[in-house]
Image 1 (cartoon, rainbow, N blue to C red):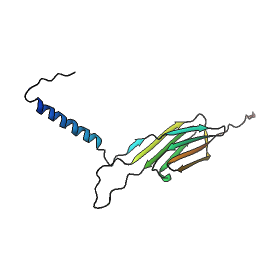
Image 2: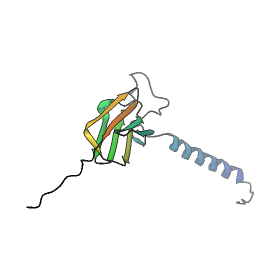
Image 3: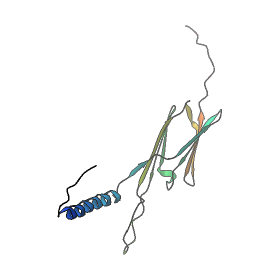
Image 4: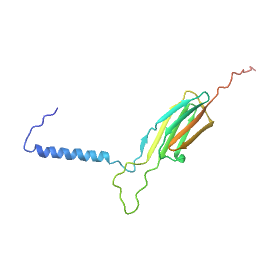
Length: 145
């Protein structure tokens, strides 16, 4: 706890402190409209004997903006939502919260997947990945020469 001495200037000091706090709060609340925020989308993972099924929420993202990388067991999903369009001529923005957003998610599955047999769809802001598990080839013998 702080103890401030009370003087005839304490009221002015209090007003200056309030103004500084207000300015700092305003600067924190006013985000740069050109900034891109990074989000980690909500993810559901389920599996069957044959495949993994991943569902991610990507609201406002077009399918052209989604990039999926499969490297063995490692899955990387990147997407970018375009910024809100600028206002028409003669109008001005009073408040803006919708900015360009980048979605990114990395995960490692318990088993490798086959990229050729896997598929991805984006409907109503939900990305669904159906990743077919790589089947282990049966035991084979190696001949000695």
